[in-house]
Length: 211
Image (tube, rainbow, N blue to C red; front, side):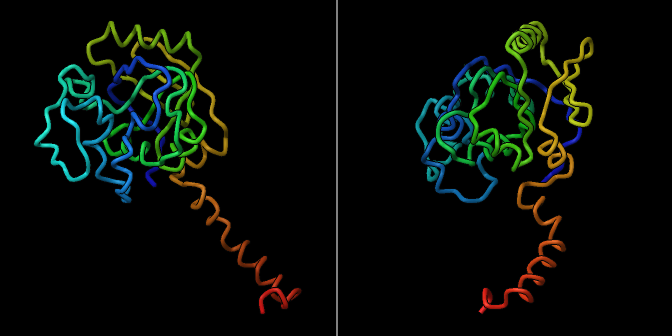
């Protein structure tokens, strides 16, 4: 997994609460099992005027010019700004894969769906929780700035614009995993020598368990 330390990118203001994972990536794309290839299907129902599925070429569908991620400069955004309860609904990890494959490295919101929040950390995407007044401030700044860019610094737990800095809080274990580029399995494997030593000791002390 790619480590996350500091990222500077364009902000797409997605001014909506309760964005569920089916909106992020509709169910017809869940049959795809690789972690890549989802970028064209992110927010699929809203990005296109024609319905689609895995078998329908994207070139045969008409993009909705009113959808924010279809408009320059937001079509190259890597920071998504949203409101409360982003990523609610079903537990599909594919929703995070789609965001990451599109190029999103950071999602900023006032709260997240619990499972989506966990999936972000296991896939190298940083979810940042800020209070609602700060979210309002960032939306106002995005509306007043043509192509707002922010720097998100995980080492310092800061979000920086040219004129202001905001601090955020993140649990230390999750922070260390992202900084190191480790998911939960990768973190566990860093203790592989201790695990193997423990298993070898048990095999000697309780051999009947291994028969």
